[in-house]
Amino acid sequence: MTDLYLYCFSNESMHGILKVGMTERTPVIRLNEANSSDTWRPPTPYKIEFAKKVLNPKQKETTLHILLSQYTKRINPKREFFRVSTEEVKTLFDLIDGNLWVKDYEEEEYNKSTISKSSIVKCRDMNKCFTNGQRILHTIGINKTWIGIYDSSKNGIMYDTKFYKSLS
Figure 1 (tube, rainbow, N blue to C red):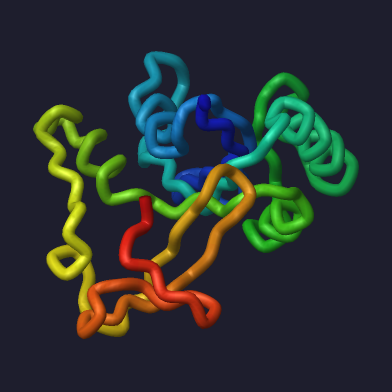
Figure 2: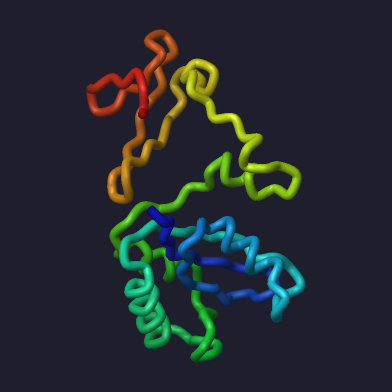
């Protein structure tokens, strides 16, 4: 399935102005596009404030833009820039179904210019990946996320009184 995200970007050169939009790619890929655009861009790079994986992102983006236009200042009616605080946008994001995006190590490594996707090694051995007591965020599909605790003595993850030897 294609990744579908709403995102909120900020830029230190544009104090108090946020870019709120949607992408069918990951937030990091969209961020890289915004920061390397051949069109107008600010002198400092954008950064991701937060993003959310959602169903029907175009409809949700349209609704977000309508609300932001009514209750804040839209910089240009044809652009995704709003004079608004991150707290206000985060409040709206919290009302939308979906999972908050968490930066993925593999995605970060993949997007570095010095590494190719084929060179990424996925960790399949939990005792080599996690430390005892480490909290593990696990997402299933688009709407179910849980946080478990790694137990090195049993080499598994405890969640809601259940023990998992594998996350596959």
